[in-house]
Length: 109
Image (cartoon, rainbow, N blue to C red; front, side, top):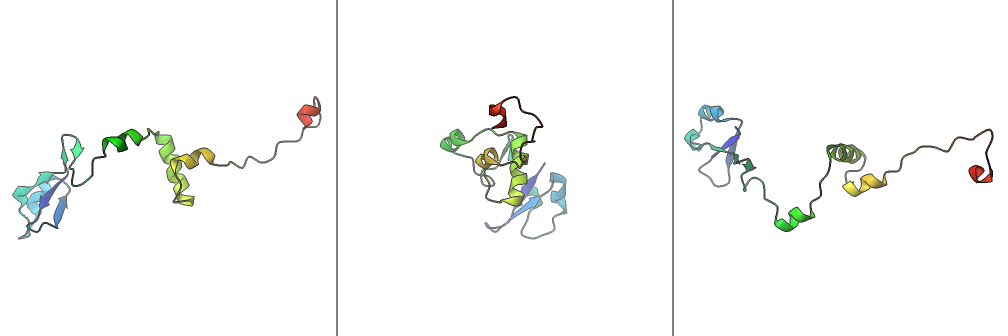
């Protein structure tokens, strides 16, 4: 269980790996008995991660793991790429193969 120990100063927070680690802290500014979890009822604490507004939640789109992986690969070449850019990736498939014989002029075209 991830947690933290608040320091006497308001600007410092000590992050710990697990609750058993809290007894190893030997600092006058930190009291291990004040250890608190970072996750409460399956939600990260609000000071750690801002909860999106209803409007932001409505604007959010569902993406698949495949899209996430493709976007991360795209970011290696273009860090400013967005999810919309995945639809416009041009694949270099090369020219069509030349046939020895065509059925009609439309196929040749």
